[in-house]
Picture 1: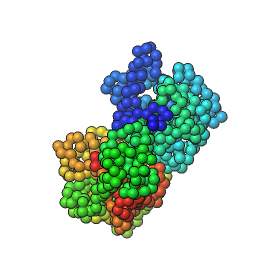
Picture 2 (picture 1 turned 180 degrees about the vertical axis):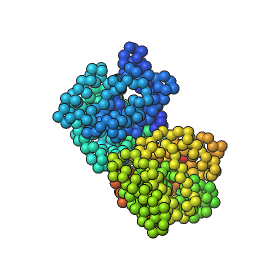
Picture 3 (picture 1 turned 30 degrees about the horizontal axis):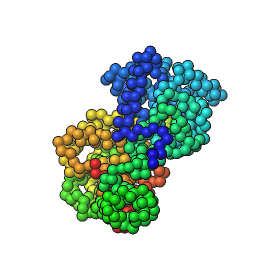
Picture 4 (picture 1 turned 90 degrees about the vertical axis):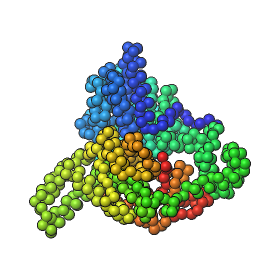
Length: 609
């Protein structure tokens, strides 16, 4: 059967390929229309994925002379009420990430007014629509897609005829924005947004989505029926709309997840394993119990033909999965190992069990914490530690005056601090040291000494804000120097892309660039973070954990007290990190059990790059 995609989709090899392709299309359009004596009108969006497009457009402006002097822009939306000078505002976002770095004329940029009097919102929205029409309509519209399927802020229930208006934000939308606002309580409850009808009038539309967390809603928008509850499905009716996805966001599309249901496939070993595991899960029967009838009924006769019999096909997949299981005896011994942890807890959350085993095998382990993670520490933790310091200074005769002065200054700042405001250097240091002390304590729980922790504090992270600087040569140099110093045989890297503020992806970029500069490349094992786990068909290695080993791993996670009970950036899953880990590791083991393999208590999964 044909792929059930109701809208064109391009799957790009990676995030950077996606942003470059979209930026190049915009650049070409500007030059085409300029050559024809016409101006280009762009519809712009905010968010982590569009930032990549804007950075590439800035590069084209600076290095290839792309001019925006005659380009007109209209942004999709703005929070309400919000001051345009507030760094949470989309006015500020666009100034920082695009407008202020190219030759766009200020009078040609348009955003909804987040300060307009409530009684004048209707007329202001009508004026915004009129300005778009006067400019000749939008030539190219950039969109993201929210987990509710919203485009702009067109939440569930937005009609196809909706125009620019004030809307109430969905609870899930506000939760997803909580990271930018340092807590859901600080996220505005309303916004002004272009309507669905306004968006659909653009002559060309590019919808951008990256990361595993976008995969479910992407599939719904691309393959599902048009539905008022999912505004993105209206894009199926547009003659020139296209989804631009990275592999993670495309993972649940039928042609990616189960390509044998769409068309003839090349039955490689990896494809056979995927198909047979899918078949086993679909009919609820262990691999070795699958019959010829099962294969035929589900369109997998070609698999049986390749192996000659269902028994041989079953045996091949069963043995292939079994060979991926690596207990302690099959893990590295007496080797030099570097584990890169984007934040000071990703190591124990994602691979605490394996780290414990590697330490027991006598490996020389260095755990490199790439960022301080200081923005994820609550202000009340700073108050608590300052109180402790002042009490300690009184009891032990430390420099009471200096500590008292530090506390008074810090508390005064915190008392007047606006949500998300950048901390003073002193408070940033205190938050960093809190995370460092927790990380060392967690490692000691796993049998790894304090001297084996390295805190890299990569420059890109040191903005004091959720939004970070791009990866620079300085970041790459820090990583490269550590690798040259340690000369590891194996390194562990966060391979997930669902981190809510992109730090994991940026850290991996720094590592990838550093690896290119090494005379010898170490073996690279990818782990996933707190949001997803590698599936058993994706995983190169599956590492079993006993009940006791999982308990040690959870104890190590508990040492990160500033992230315990209520993390500042919990991500889409509101459970505590240890709860997610326990469920995830046990689910991986249970998956193998359902497939008919050996029964384990829990498992971690890794992909060798």
